[in-house]
Length: 241
Image 1: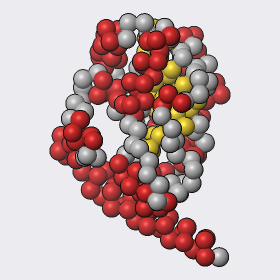
Image 2 (image 1 turned 30 degrees about the vertical axis):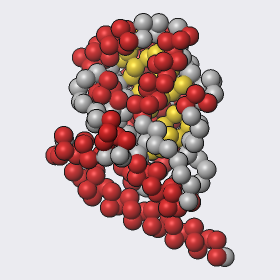
Image 3 (image 1 turned 45 degrees about the vertical axis):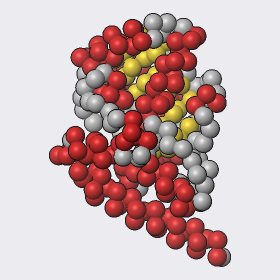
């Protein structure tokens, strides 16, 4: 699809422009979903910043182009943004998850980042929002006008929502970071650092949640490899013409 292009972000996070940005992430699972979801694919391709969040993506880029890039997790984006906001006394809005999880996030962030003003909104748990629900969400966000909007509604819903409502949002950085809400709120434990450094975070999640994750990682990774092989062949064919 687009891994062999220059779309992926390759700079340190502190090089992110301080202006309105749609920041999304891509891993093997999201790459697979984007093959059959046109709006999701547009959301990723047209985002301002596309983060390589997945060791499989890092390996795929190296095989496709020979370039060595660094994995940047959604959690890395979260901690960078919160540290930045803490330094400037900024505002952060959390959209997604349950009221209970959002309360835990607010309590923890208030202690860890005392200079950040936090607001949140728990939307209905459904595939799509109706007009009234979207209006209520946008009004809550725009009344607060956050420097950073954290969107945690899982892929592809969060990216599609942010992409479709981008021009209606009065915000700075829009960060689609999914499971980070549960990690930071203590609902789900993230992998230990040694596993993250070895590129085994996916294995930790599979062990912890086998019923939910087996299809994503066991079947999904095989599907991802097949797509990457197809992309590699496509590059060879185009270069030989």
